[in-house]
Amino acid sequence: MVIVVDRRSVIPVQKQIALQVKKEIILGKLREGDKLPPVRELAQRLGVNVNTVLRALDDLVHEGVLDVQHGKGYFVSKSEILPKELIEELEGIAEKLKSSGVDRSLAMVLLMEVWKGE
Image (cartoon, rainbow, N blue to C red; front, top):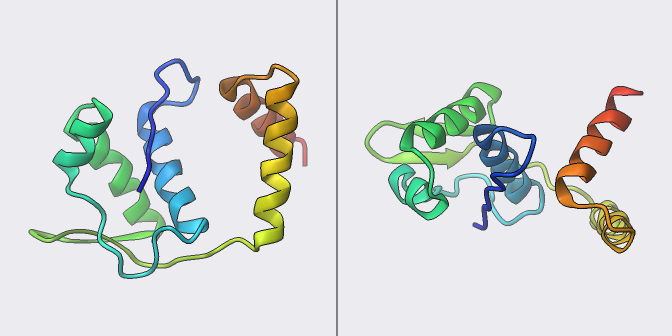
């Protein structure tokens, strides 16, 4: 599982972690029943407070994306994989934005604005 925190992002770290776990599920890298790495390990790897990781994962539990088994950890409770064509289309859009000089933070802000406009 690859999660990267961008401290310059307008998106709070807790939200970034939750979104990236969802991304791993949507892309099929994490499947139903898979166990996530231990919270302390994730926090150390990301260089963030353990409580930040806990809050992110608990948000996903409340959304029904993860299950928590006390003493055992967090597990993927459902996996919804996007069609390959949609992933390829998103990759194409990301490449166009990069080649136009748009950084990741701005791309996220633009996407949120487009999403709100619907």
